[in-house]
Length: 552
Image 1 (cartoon, rainbow, N blue to C red):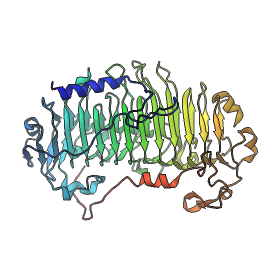
Image 2: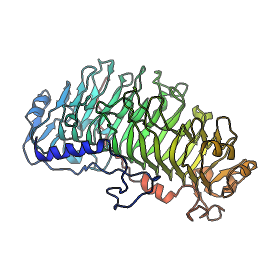
Image 3: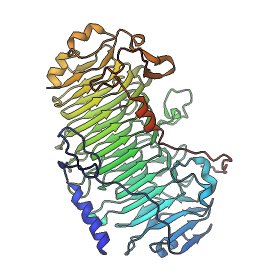
Image 4: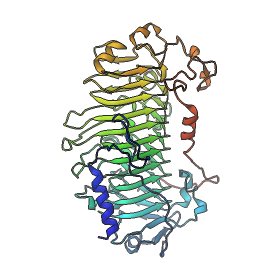
């Protein structure tokens, strides 16, 4: 093993069980308070390294695996545009360091710009890698490293009824040396078919791995959860940026199975600028329902994860089905009972839009199996729109925090939900800060099992909570049940939105809540910051299109 690779694997091992330090690396070495989520310490560098070696061109009918086996660091393997390569291919573990590029032979000018998301309209310039069975179209050998895949389509043969994962990066590693690492999938198109049972687009059980500018769709299964991307057996860091992610169970999930390496927690996870969605054609009873019931759960779930940044994403279309319709689920799980180190900690959920869902964010503090907790979660500057139990099923609640969620901070969010603001039960949740938020109070506001709205619930379930400078619209008769520094306008009109009917939820200059937050800012979302974060996502459509005859 060369020294560079040995050092990298040692670094991975060092971070497996590392808790939060007093100094957060990569953020100016600023001291942080115990309740602050720590940002990711490590980041995946996706800077393109131009090939310096040979070009191994594989034409239609050629041997793709032979090219992978022959490629050396610095080489590029090109695949003929539109050609189909059927098989179960493996990225080998090369002994020496250096990047190998696998890409379409089409010129860069035929693809989206390097920072733009690919769409299915580019299919005619993409070679296809097709699994002929239930096994992966592409997998990584133990320890495989430094591969960048650009402009490739991955799918399943039309004769196959079920596939358990199109791309598998890591498979039950027994040591850090077995973990594939330094893998980048850039502008790839990964998809199933209308009635195919596809369990997973990418199993990301690896380290230093990025999925960027890509499109993953038609990931669904009738008898099990399905995920566009799932990771449970790799330490990270991970970068998931500017992708379209579509799956029936969980569009993206970390955790969900016990890691094979003791103390492993997927860590240092960057989730930015993505579109998470479920097509309404999957919703039973919708006018566009396509006829197959794919069990739907949520859009994003964290069961075992540490130092996670979720910023600038659009989450839409989630309804009550196999679960209660909650879009974002953050709840620790020692899934199979053999990983008591499982934890969810240091999560920042900021500058996102969550819309068209039965409930907003659900947080659970402790598992029924022995586990660590859920702690240090910040939910800041997000817009929750059309959170409706009446329309999407479920309870229409904005937040649920139960069973000892510790150090939860919810601030500067604007929401429109038809259920409670916060629901809770189980063990008390210490360290809640709820401030500078704007939403309807509705019938119950902040409510716990066995306790009434407001003070009774805060006293029983949120000891020492800081609840201030929130606008809770309507039901002003409950104002006396909350701390004095909150606001209870009688109606949406009294809030003073710029144009609520047209979904312009900024506060007008005449609003009494303009600059009325605890920090002197507007109560609710800073829409300038939200717009800037959302603008980072870039999608391009190929103007001419690429129609292809395909019976899948």
